[in-house]
Image (cartoon, rainbow over all chains, first blue to last red; front, side):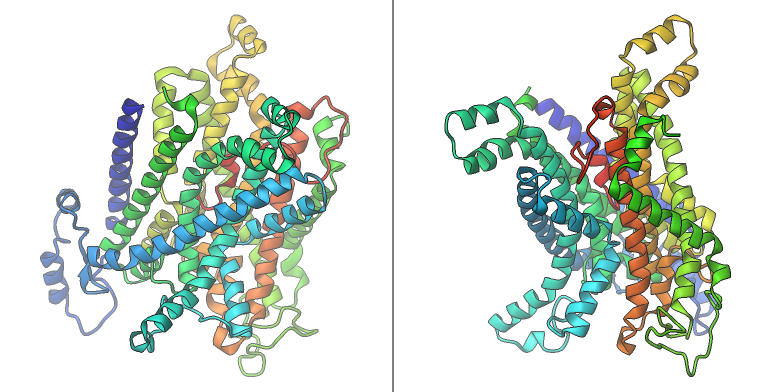
Length: 320
Length: 303
């Protein structure tokens, strides 16, 4: 186990390194640079000066080595749009993304597992049919459109919740602690609910089929035969086995969740790394774009590692 | 035609018929749509009188903030969205199938190395990477968009194909073909491919829906299909003005996308039921939601 873990760790580092390299070249080879925006107020001499100052005039190979060196020192370059180091921008936005994605992930697993189990035990009956149809429809919603609809419904038509941002831009700093927290929560509800609904479908579908695989097993019949109440059979005996594949799903779902987060953050102007990435693209803020892809892959890789560890912890067959 | 048991089972599947009908209507609409409508998708009708008008008899889906007819835009967008999605999925399954077949058939160290590469590729945050490429290389031509969507969409499929190939290659007829001196390429594409085709077809069908949704999302961010080329996502990009309250510009094109994606997902589920070899010899017609295992690989929406 320890050797596998070491190998997985090494592999993760290699993956992040490769993603960093690909992203770096994709970004730097793109036409233009952060200083090529249209403005008559900036003379070519000033642009050239900036390029020299930030090293954009050097050969690409040199830029690459310098970039790797700075990443190794925990620096990701400078954001020309936000006028701060990229690390500062990440420090500001990453917690927001982790909060949103974490909440949605937790909620959708809880909801998805419960729905999936009930579907499997009521297979073919009305609850199974109706909820399967509903979930498949939710699953078919493009993430951005699902979020837009939530925005339209609960913020535009039925003015229940704020339309965007993480806090009230004007009032938040002046509110007492309790009201400020409430302000935070009210801004979180719509994006988190959208992301949860869009993710739950995948979890429930998978849990349903895992449960259908587990229910006919011999040990389930044995549990029934020795008189365990049906509720105990389903929620303790069968579910325990049927949860194992869910851990695999957890790891594989992360890139998809991150993608969904980008769209939801954009729709609700939620200041996370997805929102940061989208605005950085428009401003050709190279270092920020590169950093968001790298951080995204680090998140996915860490998630996969955790899923593997969790899998090994709950599945004795993997403890070799 | 009805001699094919898989096809027959598919056609007795009620939701599959619904899905096939929806997709057929969409394809027809995408082909003849532009001749049916009286306005061009990009045509600005009357910026003074027809700006942001709600749905009416003359404009069923209303008009957007540039006075363009939304129904016409949906119909002309169908063509691009469907074409981009099917071509990129075709590209993805070509790479993914070949990669998976080779890895599964060759096995050993080569397979191990190929799988490590795949593991790495599966941790790439696809949306963020596409955002960087499409956004900074702006404007990317349609062919580039297709190649990028396809080139980042084959990882999960190829893992699935490899697993199926590893099971299939242990079957006797492969040994027989090897004993008869068939070449590696012949065994891969002539003997193994038909055996693993079922999951590929299912996965491809589900992917078409996912890619339509993904492309719409990228266009919504302003980096998918570029104006004036209309695609379903670009309708949202430059027609929506929430402050003017033109909800119809968001609702109707979105419903078109959802109906399409849903149709492909339902069809994919039905195909899985119909093509599952475990059900080949049973006379039971699958009804209701799919009973067979859902592959994790099929759940990766933006993955």
